[in-house]
Every structure is written in structure tokens, then in C-alpha cells.
Image 1 (tube, rainbow over the protein chains, first blue to last red):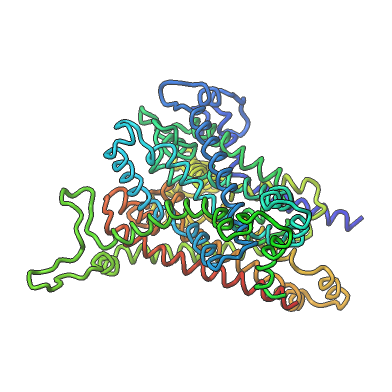
Image 2 (image 1 turned 60 degrees about the horizontal axis):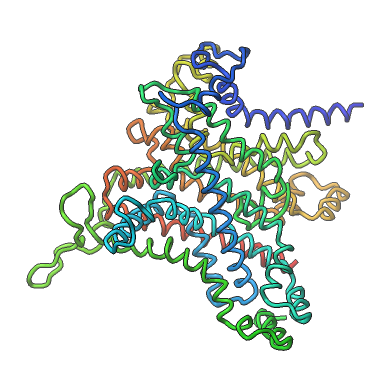
Length: 298
Length: 328
């Protein structure tokens, strides 16, 4: 059975590669089950009595050095799910129009949309930050908004920003999928007396479900992971700070100590969502990581 | 059938079936496009115009003077300074050139190493279709690229830690001297680069698998029957089909590596000195630490141009691929 042994060796080495790439995450997961002093042990302890102390402190703790984790999670979930759903709705309608009516500006607009995602985040946030501030001042002056409340610098502004952040990819992927649905389906619908809206939602929509799922999953991951926009625009007052923000500012607690236990437990809770997503929806990974431009499975 | 006649067809069919006039009108397609255009105008077009406007201004939030145009006109109507003052400053700023250079090296090294590693490992994973637990293994392999750079930056900071970090522990076990990677002038850049390679090599593995998957099975079997050597197979069978996806992968990686900001922000904040100060982070600091809005708008505009150039290249490859698929 020489070839069986060879196969086993081959699979074994592939597993080894996968585990090597996973090691840093495993290491932080291990740390999250240690006590604060165990994390600082030299030599680093691999065998130890696991404790859920860090998780309890991170999730339920209030007071010194621990921030409001549940609120961060709530903000992250609301902002990412809400804005991605919004983006998919507007992108689906637009993708249908681009695919079927082929307006003259189609290629140009698709190009512009894609290029907005290729700019460094710090470049695209500068004018948005200026503009949001100015818009709010205008609204205050016009008396449309209370002095203490914010609109663009508040939840609606951040929500819109993330919607636009998710639009290019949704549009690209959905246009690709709708292009793949033969126009004969539309025609059959019309000949049978269906309205255009019926054709859009009852004939085309069900056929692009994989595209909708991929757009949803991967935009969710991208918004879930987004940091710089959130760091600049987010605030506790308007419930717009997300978990990456909490991670970025949480390392040093109010006493000036490094709080690795908090970071470890929070980041483990945080990476669960992307990991579960790519486990369950692995067949969409390729289309998801290439803005919908490359289709296929791995 | 030509594209034009295809485009007319829904309308023709619609007329024949007696659809409601609004639904077959141009207005209907505009109504479908309206929501996305509103978002696009408010969040992309206006900010970009805003940015273009500010790039001609001297505008610093820290200085008490109001924003003013970057050029001044004397009483006789002579320009004393160029309107493009901010751009001239960018051109003359040696620090900025260094940041661009650093970014260039970062992108080049990261992409080359990721492509080489990714292609090799991708070939290795090619025959793994029947591997037990493949899904779990691939999830573990691909996790680094779907977690936020903030988290991965922190993970590696924990491991690079000079006193209790596991990497330094291993170094001392093998008899080496402890290195404080992230504050050491020689080590900080490679340390950050290494994290980027860890994060994104899986992406190139993914793209390699996709490229290999795009090669028709029949051609591979024919090559097998012909007993072609591996390199011949690579050159005549795999590359003609797989090269486009690979090129798209390389381009996407180049763009993403060029954008790197979060990772260095979290790991080193550009330090020690300037050794990890990539252009994205530098821009962030001009805008939000020095609050120099005029200058950073101009710089952001330059980066926008670079992004547009990258996007054009990407679409060019995409078109090449479409054309080659149509011709076969």
C-alpha cells in the first residue's frame, strides 16, 4: 500500500500548511483562556487550566479597563447587516437596469464605482469627514436639526457611508449574475403578461440568489472588518463604534496597563463571524474576494 | 445577434405584450438607477469635487487664518504663486517621496513573495479535492485574509512582544538574542511585511486554485496521455487558460498592498522613525494629526489618480480574459 501511504503524507502536509497559517489565531485563542498573569508567563504556557475569566470580564464586566462589549457588538451587527442589505437592494435594481437597458454610461459608471474601492481608506475619508461636518453645520443653521443632535456625523451618516462602501462590490457581482440570466426569461414573462416589476422580483431575482448570498456575506465581512472610517466618524454617543475600534483602543486600559486578556477574548469573539461565514459559504469565497469578477469554486 | 438589437428587445417585447407605458419607458430604467446614483453623488461625487476644490487651498484647521487659495494675485493682476502650490509641495517633499518609495518596496516585496508562495502552495493544494476535512482545513487556511488588519496586527504584536512574546521565546530557546521587532529600525519593516505576507498568501493560493480550476479537464487529460513534461504542461496547457485569473489576483494584491494603512497604524504607527510609514498612513497623519486639509486633499487626489490607473489595468485584464474566452 505504498500509494495509500503517499496520499496520507500528502494530505498530512496540506493539513500542516493550513495549521501553520492558523497558528497566530490559535495562539490568541489560547491566550484568551489564560489568566492575565498566565499570558505574561515565560516560557509561554501551553498546558494550563483554562479559565473563562477573560470572557466573563469582557462580556459582562463593567468598570475599570473594560468597555461596553455588548454595545460594540450591537453596533457592529446593526451597521453591517443594515447597510449591506440596503446596498444590495439598491445595487440589485441598478444592476438590473445596467444589464437590461444598457444605458450609455454603464461601463463608465461601473468603472468609477470599482475605482472608489481601490483608493486608500485615508484618502476617501478626508473629504467625507469635511463634508459631513459641514452638512451638519448647515442643518443646524437652517434649524432643521437640534443643536445637540447630529445627522451626518451621527448614525445616518455612518450608515450611508457603509452602504456606499458595499455598493461597488454588490453592483459588480449582481450585474455579472444578471447578465448570466438569459433575456428569454424576461421575454417569456412579458409575453405571459407579467409586469416588469414581476419579472424583476419573481423571474430574475430567484435566479441570482448565489450572487445575492455572496454579496451579502462578503460585504458583511468587509463592513465588519472596516476600521479607519469607523475610527474617524464613530462615536459612543451615536452608537456608531464597532468592534475593530474597540480592539484598536482597548489594548491600553485606563490605568495605562496593557490589557491582553481583553484583546484576546474580544478578538476571538470577533473573528468567529468571518470564520463561520467562510466555513459555511466556502463556495462563494472566490467570487467574494475578487469583487465578483472571477467566478468559480475552490 | 448584435448588442444593440439585444438591448432593444425588452422594449419591443414589452410593446407587443402591451405593458404599462411607464414600465417600458426610459423613466423606468432611471427610476431603477436613481437610488444608487443618489448614494453615489452624495458620498462619492460631491466629496471628490470637495477634495479637488480644497486641493487648491491653503487650509489648516490648526491655523487661525481662514482657508484661502493657494495662490495670491498682486494688484496688477500677476500671479505670485502657482494655484497648484499644494501639488508643488507634494512634488518637493522629500519625506513624501521616501514614503512613496517605502510603499513601493512594501508592495513589490509583499506581492512578489505572496505570488511565489501562493502559486507554489496553490499547486500543492490542487489535488486536494478528496482530502478528509478539506473544508475545515481551507477555513483555517483562508481565515487570515478575512479578519480585520486591526486584529491581525494585535495578534502579531502579542507574538513579537520582546518580554513575553512567543517568537522571542523561541529565539532564546535556540540561543539567540531577544529582538524588539517593532521598535527596531532594521526589523520593524520586515516584521510588518511578514504579517502582510501571512495575511494575503492564502489569497494567492485561492487565486491559483481558481486559475487551475479554469483549465479544461479534457486538455489536462490529453497532456497526460501525451506524457508531456510538467513544464511543458505548465506552459502550453495551464498558463494559456490560467494566466488571466492569476493576473487579476496579482493586480488585486498590488492595489490592496498599496492601500495598507490599518496594519501599520496598529502595529507601529509608522515608527520607529519613519521606517514603516507607508503612504496611506502618512496621508492619514497629514489629514487627522496635522489637520492640514488643503495639502492632504491634494495628496489624496494623487492617490485617487493612482487608484484609477490600477482600476483601468484591472479592467483591461478583465476584458482580455473575456475576449480570449469568446474566441475559444
